[in-house]
Length: 183
Image 1: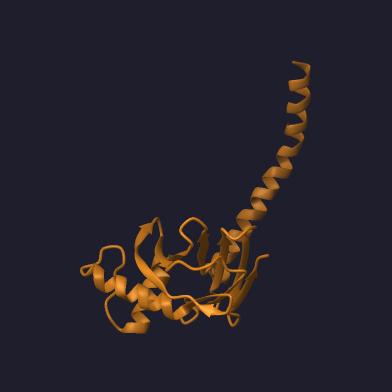
Image 2: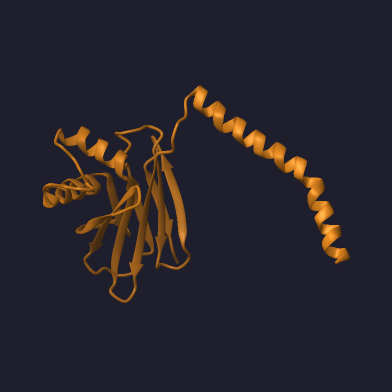
């Protein structure tokens, strides 16, 4: 019982500090509203080499509203990825856009991948691709310009697994090329 009281009194001493930290965080958040809040523009691309099937699996996660706005701007057509009137048309738009803006090469040879489909997850769209079987690469090169035509603040995170150590990197405009090497 004495130990609990001892720790409780120490915690009580930190209470004013915690209150001040809360006030500071609130002030920062509120000041962002007055200065002009700038949201983050981020995509995540996961590249996995499946050693059993010898294929490269690619998954891209992009915020739905940003992706729809970009596709509208590129194509001048009505885009609704969540409740599409013509799902095959939306799939075609996604496939064409990703293939144009995400180029992956293995050991210097550009990979061709097939579109498997897409799904909604909370506020984002996941799109899925797969390659034909290839030998396990020692080097992957990725050119990623996803949503650069929408916002210059875009950040594209790329994660590579299945080739040894998991590696991650990012591009920010105007950077677009990443290299991943494995021994």
